[in-house]
Length: 208
Image (cartoon, rainbow, N blue to C red; front, side, top):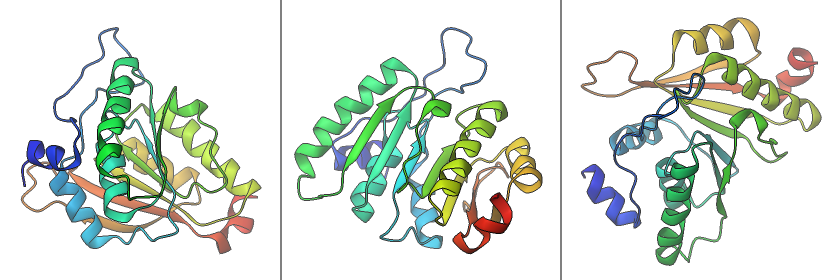
């Protein structure tokens, strides 16, 4: 199913790219994850009904709506571009009119990813190359701090992983790579998902 057709099935509008107009250095442009890539991801990765998802740099909300509809679990999107955030809110109104039967909350917060207060129930974190390694370090640090305060297993789901992201997670964090999901017929070798996990049983020894 095409991108626009999938959007229509969810009563949302998420296609297109938006560049920053002010020469933003640390936050990257808006570009939605392809629906076909999301289909492939969840054919090979079990989200789990206990999942509570945060999408950093959620854009117009495509991943949030897709996951909410497919799994019926709580999703939070964080977006720093004011215009894109407003579009996500408009999409939510249209989506919710059609998806009233799904009881799990779906919400969007406006602000910088590094300022998001990680909730004690948040345990799945999605990234599509949304910002620089400087911001990514801060966000992962916030996640680890939350885990220290409220021990739990957490996953990082990264689409189009950069070398800097991978090096940081491998050398400077207790997260372990548990899954690699490649996109069939992808021309760019970076077009894949990497899933990193911090298991609850490893928290005391690795994050203390």
